[in-house]
Image (tube, rainbow, N blue to C red; front, side, top):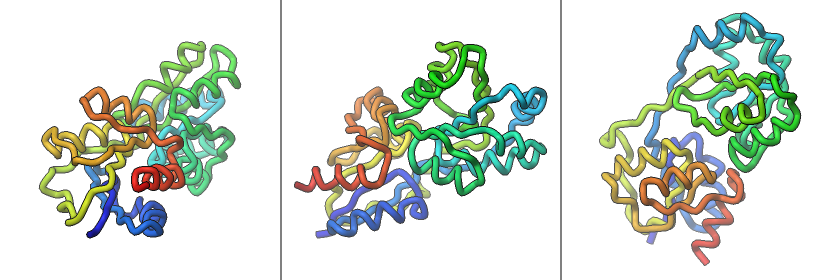
Length: 242
């Protein structure tokens, strides 16, 4: 009987995950409940351009933000601003994509945006400025943590995630679900909505503590991965299988 894990991302994003689980006879089934779209924020970029020298760090809390941000900065003739800023990234995947986009990563956090912000705040003086390239629906933890330390944050949305129609999602495969991996807070909510409030009858995992908390707020227990990495995901699936 086929064993599979449902992951709330698209198939191209899951190549490494599929390779890791194939060693254990488990398939990865993509379930992309959200679709990514680039957005523009003229007012935000105008604020960046008005005083570009005030920014000391660039914060990226999502793997999706780097390429969208670099493209948007280029359209607004502000590519040099991003090029000079050291990057603080949440997760190794975010850091890798930032580097591929030509950015200079100097700080990588593995425990979510709030933890990264606390580390970043220790490197800044009160009154410092951080540019945060983010989703239009970004969460407040990074800004809240930094602002509590007297650091200013300018969020500039560069993409948004829209929930897909349930009819557009691929059908569930036959066989036994081993687990569901919820990859973001919004993905957790969208998963429950397209499932009409009835989660699959298997363990649920969350890419981080913030995602686990979002699921818990809806009554769904999800165990947060130790780190938002393929290795941590593989280890958790092995624990479930044992």
